Length: 176
Length: 167
Image (cartoon, rainbow over all chains, first blue to last red):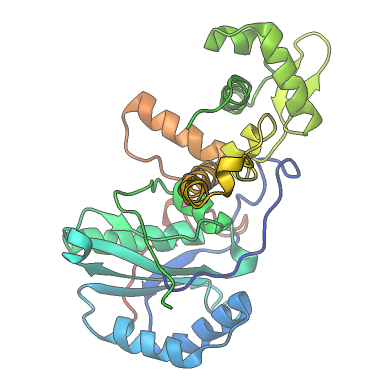
């Protein structure tokens, strides 16, 4: 995954009850990204990662929002009842890739971000469900992602969605 | 990877408590479910009580309740109350200072890192889903649909609209 939101460490071992934050105050609509969404994507990403990268997101929009849309999915979540106040609740990006690493075609999710104030409200789940549906409609039966070992919140999220360790091990090397 | 028996008992106990959140369970009830001694389990529950993971309710009908957040408490959180999983095992013998020892330790450290990350990625709530799926043979259970606010008339089942193309 080439992008993950920097998340605040969570150390809530015994501080909250199970009833914490299970309600949502807004309906969620997931749809394909539009050009008008990109400033909001950039704003959300900058706020979360504290690293502005407008050029990157404009390029991602061109490649994943406009090209090869049958196998590339750049989706956004919004509250259709309250567009003025909360234009973008989150986004997810993925694509179908085939025969790389010896793998049959599968869907790869490589970016997911949710408005920090709206986390634990089912928005990430809605985004993942939407892109899962698109992958399935496109004919693949497997979805993968990659998460940093110390990325506690993304790991917890994907595990809670039923994702488990896959058959590959990621390897890397410093280039001298 | 192996977990110590205390860690395993603690995880079983927490899973049992979160499966029956509507009432307290005694040490004997939990022990009976998993066929373990109440004596050992009582010590485990005491440690978890001190850590704030469970609370003891006294009196008739009393017992233990889970006091943590099942969506945030991981297997690692529970296990490391009973064993040191937070750092790489100390390997400080003379042989560990040799290039062979250092190289082997590097490999073992990789394994430790992955094991720790795996335990740290699975919450009690996720475990309960996995257990439910194993027991029922059903597909991955869906989360309850996010709800609209109390004043909205939007039906719960329509609270999320997936993938509507823009107008």
